[in-house]
Length: 286
Image: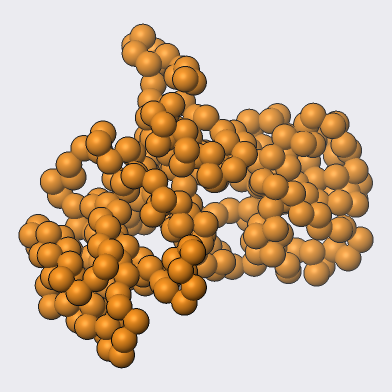
């Protein structure tokens, strides 16, 4: 069992697992969702889901979708594998920064480390600096941590301002992402048995599978629409061990409180699997 930090009141803070290092965007999202919490960084996403499922942490925060890069496919699979539930979501504006050690100038830099997605979202920056080589790293905040640990003064990292503060580095150039409309949606997860009821939920996430016959998916989607819910996302994933069979993940806006139960009931007669992944308040704003 991991140990939570203790707050100023002497009460243990909730322990929240994230994938990535302290200072990662997931860390920032966790503090947005649970301001009074301590963070357990995990190397792999599977580790995040595992430690929460085993009760070693109180909650987990995971990215599920980026407005530019798309869905985090692995996390859909893990949501179905573990008996966890979504209790909240948050939108985080992703601001990429060029970060280096104190005293390092941009002219000193020959290599920039970051997660491949972050590097891809800063192509214009690299196009104007052909002497600087982008180098893929496992984590945005981890790349800043690597600079601090190695004292590398010919390298920089791309990460959040939170990561720069965490590791005592400095921002040489702020907001270097190509597109300012860069947001990531994060889920706050808890064990299903521990999840509190969300009385004002206006969003529902589901997973379901349909028979492999003409019109079965159309029928399922029509049943969702018939309940007055607004489908905002659909994602398909293959069923492991059953070639050419798929599970569909959907997010729906709820227009009235009973819509969630009615949607699930409407799908059940014609679907082999109907799994509620969570009811929660829809995130708005930055």
